[in-house]
Length: 82
Image (cartoon, rainbow, N blue to C red; front, side):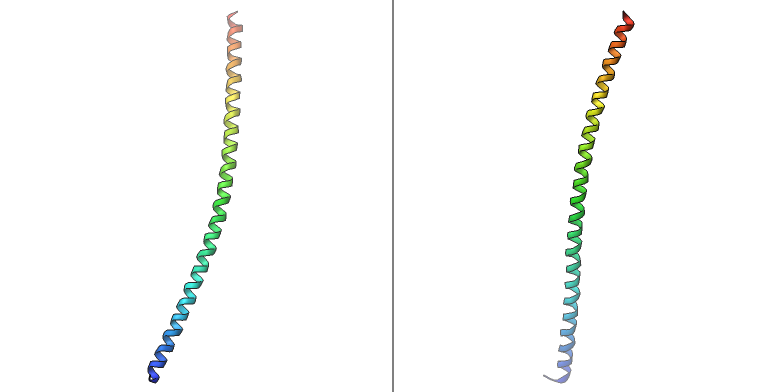
């Protein structure tokens, strides 16, 4: 192997190593991003569950208030008719 070929091979090896290192860094970044997104997704799901529970409680309270109001209206009409 001549000197030029050795230089060329060395440059290719350095470029390959640089490319590998760059790719390795990008994969590490993607792994971290994936972990971060997973944590965020879990937090969002927990918040959604909390909001769903609160929504159900509010709907139940609204239904109770509606039933009480209807009962009061029925009694008022009965009083008015007597």
